[in-house]
Amino acid sequence: MARLVVVSNRVPIPDKSGTAPAGGLAVALQTALEARGGLWLGWSGRSCADDAVGPLQRLKEGNIEYALTDLTERDVEEYYQGFANRVLWPICHYRLDLAEYGRREMAGYFRVNRFFANRLLPLIEPDDLIWIHDYHLIPLAAELRRQGVTNRIGFFLHIPWPAPDVFHAMPVHEEILTSLTAYDVLGFQTEHDCENFADCLFRRGLGKRLDTFRFVVGERAFTARSYPIGIETDDFAALAKRAAETALHKRMLQSLDGKQLIIGVDRLDYSKGITQRIDALESFLNRHPDSQRKVTLLQITPKSRSEVPEYEAMQRAVAEQAGRVNGALGTVDWVPIRYINRSLRRPALAGLYRMAKLALVTPLRDGMNLVAKEFVAAQSEEDPGVLLLSRFAGAAQELKEAVLVNPYDVEGTADAMARSLAMPVEERRERWKAMMKTLRANDVFTWCNTFLDDLAGGPAAQKARAAS
Ligand code: G6P
Image (cartoon, rainbow, N blue to C red; front, side):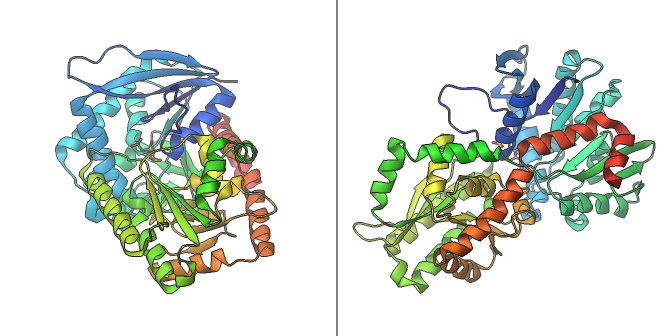
C-alpha cells in the first residue's frame, strides 16, 4: 500500500489536555489517518519573525508522523487571516458582503502555498499518495507540479463551493480555478458543491466534462465528485454511552433539575447562524410561555480566528445577545441560555449530546457539519433526541429524517423547536434509526477509503466505479 502524505493548514497537534480540536477537518482526518497511518504536514499554529522560521518539527504519535512548520507573522496575517479567512471563507459561505479582497493578502496566499510546497518536497517519495485539504492550500498542487512532482495528488474541500455568480466576484477566481486542475482527484462535500465547481469552470469557458466524474481542462484530465465526510459512528456511540457514568454527566443532570436540555455546539463563526438561532429560541419561549423554566439551551461556542475583525465583532454580538435574552426572560433560578466559550473534551461532549432532547444545528451555510452526525450517533435507541438541522448544511443531503429548517426563517425555526420538543417517542425512534443507518453506511473510513481508491486507482478504476 502506498504511503499517504496529508497536508492541511490546521493540524490537531497532540496535547495532554485531550480537548477536542476545533473544526471538522482536524477530527475527521485524525481518525482516518490513525487507522491508515501516514505523514501529516501542516502549520504548527505558531508565528515568528521573518528570519526565524526554523526546521520542521517532527513528532510521531501512534500511526501518524507529524511534520509541523512555523509561519512568519506576515504569512499568518496575509495568507491565513487575510486571503483564506477574509476572502475565500466568506465567499465560499455566500458572504460576499464580508469579503475583504486585497492584493497584498492574495500575493501572501500564493507565496505561502509555494512555501508549503518547498517544505513538502524533501519529504515525498515517488510512490506517495498526496492528499491536500481545504481552502487554505488550493494552489499547492500547481506549485508541486511546477517543481516536477508527478505523484498522484488529491484535494478535498471541507467547505461549500458557491454558485458561479458568487465565486466569480472574487478577483483572482480564474487563477484559483485553474490551479485546481493540477490535481488528479477533486473531492467536495456534496454533489451540489461539485456541480457549482463544474458550472464555474464552464461559465469561464474552461474545459469540458468527459463523463459524469471526469473533466478535462487544457492538457489535464481529472476526476471531480462528492465524497461526503463522515464520523466514526459506532465508536462515538459507544463513547456517548460510557459518558453517562461520569461525574460531569451526573453534575449536569443534577443542575438541569428536570429541565429539558437543548444543545448547540459551534465554533464562533458567522456562518453558523448562532444569532439567528438565539432569536429563534427567544421567539419560541415568548410564544410558548409554558416552556419557560422547562428548557435550557447549552450553547458551547469555542472562540475562533479571533484576530479576524468579523470574528471579533461576532464574539461581542453573541455575548450581548445571550446576555440580553437571559436578562429579559431569566428568573432567579433559571436562565434560558448557558453560554460557554470553551471547547470540551470529546467524551464530555458525547455525553451532553446523549442527554439533550434537541440539538440545534442551524448554520446559514456549512460544508457538512459533523456536530449533526455526532449528535445522532450519541443518542440512545430507547429515547433519542431530535436533530433540528439547517437545510443549508451539507449534512442535510444525507440526514433527511432530521427536522429540516431554513435558519433565516426565525419564526419557522421557533415552530420547529416546539414541534421537535413535543415529538412522540415512536417518531423520534423512526427518524433516528433511519439516520443511524445512513451514518453507518458512510462513516469516516468509507469517506477516506473511497477518496483514496479513486486517487490510487487512476482513470480506469474511476471509470469502472462510475459505471457501476
Ligand atoms: C473549518 C475548516 C477547517 C478549519 C476549521 C477550524 O472546519 O474547514 O479547515 O481547520 O474550520 O478553523 P481554524 O481557522 O481554527 O483552523
